Amino acid sequence: MYEAKRRFSLLKREYPSKPAVQKYISLQEWKSLKVPFIIGSRGEIKIPKRQNKKLEESFKNIKAGKIYYFNREWKEVNDWLVNPDSNYRYDITKHWTEIEDISSSAGDIKYVWEKSRFSYLYDIIRYDYHFDQDNSSFVFSEIEDWIEANPLNMGPNYICSQETSLRCLNWIFALYFYQDSEHIDEAKWHKIMHFLHWQIKHVYANINFSRICVRNNHAITESMMIYFGGLLFPFLNESGKWKKDGKEWLEEEIAYQVYEDGTFLQFSHNYQRVLMQLLTWTITMSEIHKENLSETTINRATKVVEYMQNCCVGREGQLPNYGSNDGALFFKFNDLDYTDFKPQINALNSVLHHEHLYANEDIIEDALWMNQKSDSDSKITTSSPEFGIKTYSQGGIITIMDSDSFTFFKCAKYKDRPAHADNMHLDIWVDGVNYLRDSGTYKYNTDKQLINYFAGTRGHNSLMINAENQMKKGPRFIWYNWTREAQLNGDNQGEAFTLTGKAKMFPTVGNGKGLWHNREIVKSEGELNWTVLDSVKDKESNDELHQIWHPHPDFLDMISMSAFDAKGNEIEIKEETGYWSAYYGVKTEVPIWVFSSKSDTITTKIKIRQ
Image (cartoon, rainbow, N blue to C red):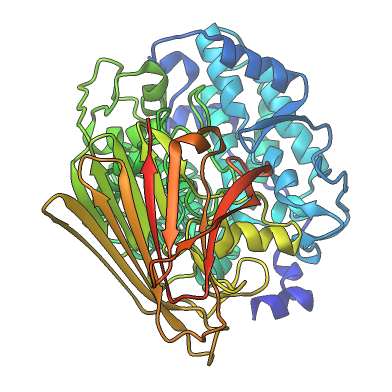
């Protein structure tokens, strides 16, 4: 119905490009209301000031017209409508409903949205705060320039309501921080308020697309923006409705999308970090406005922290590069690498429990911005990783923490849309190094071969039958024949940990009814030895099993692997070419190891040498 309304221009009528400009309260009246936000004006902030070279360099790059794309690569961007990856310029005379977001000629639309999200403002805000500078004129000129270049509801920057929501949130943060600046006057206030008002109206009118068609972090972001719009702008006629509906939808989405065990329906650590930031903002704002959140919301947030902290095992705060990873980090208040999850884990824990999990000043700055009641001397509750097996059955994840190693294994049955065909994936870490790893994501809009590699089974430490994925690939983000039947168990008896996964998959192989893939992993306690037994019963004799491994290329000499078929015959290891993508839009060629056999079992012994 939504697509029909879009194609026949019925949707276009609901989103005017030149709505009447109404008179809002004055800038001084708004300031006098003192409606509380996560922060007040810059003069009210009490975070310890710490100048550092990396923040200074980021500031200089932004002032020079560059944006840190997907938290990895600086690109010069001088036009809000040009994709710097493909050089395609979108037609601003087209209504947003008339623009396709997937186009081979335009390239990946995320490259256009990245700057228009305005997350780069946080580097300017932090620079001004820590270095006692004032770049408010630059910030407001950036917002005004975007407004002039992007008429309401026209062009590519209104297609995604989540991007619109983030833009509004980031503008609001800047408004509060710079509210006492001499560079915001009545005319700028009304111009910005007009665009905030109509963008939130756009998000509210379009919310069913995210809540029904998409149902992921988009719906949480948009519901949160609507809720905040009601809290922050009581002078708008819609504020009561926004506050009521936004909060109701937001808590419904959290209850549905966040599983009881702390895992997330998007099956992605990066998107779960997005979730953590949204939960952090939600809890903070609700406390400030004395709005009670449901017990379910708080419980799910607490479980999210526990799960993410358990999986945060990298030397620099990394987690397994699991699921879709598009470089999203909406609100960054630190100078650490994007792959470090500790600042966001700590920030959510801080607003929940008013204490820090880490002592590092670089890590806790996020928490200090998000929780103004907190300070750098707050109680620090450090905890050693819990030894043994942890099972997250709803997310289909099981982990082993054993001495200096971490084992991460996935076997899920899907009630929500999967992004990658990565069941039976095995991640192995030793001393914070990811020896056997997930390939990542690369891009959402690229050639089919690369999409099939990164999202398909070949991009994971799993098993393929012939050249088939575990599920049938559909268009865009779609998979058909979801894995509906799966079992996951863990056991620790004697001197070994045993993980077992069993799932009915491969609908395109054999009689079309699917085949059961069983994977058993035995980890020797206190030793860096793993045995992996893959078996596929009832397969055709000509069907070939391909067991695929993605070793870290810097440590190939430290990884020993040998495999055997059902008769005990050793299987030759084949080195092939694969890809690795730690950051969105970036890929490198790496070796992958493959064991192939027409036997119905492959037993592989893995040893990490140090």
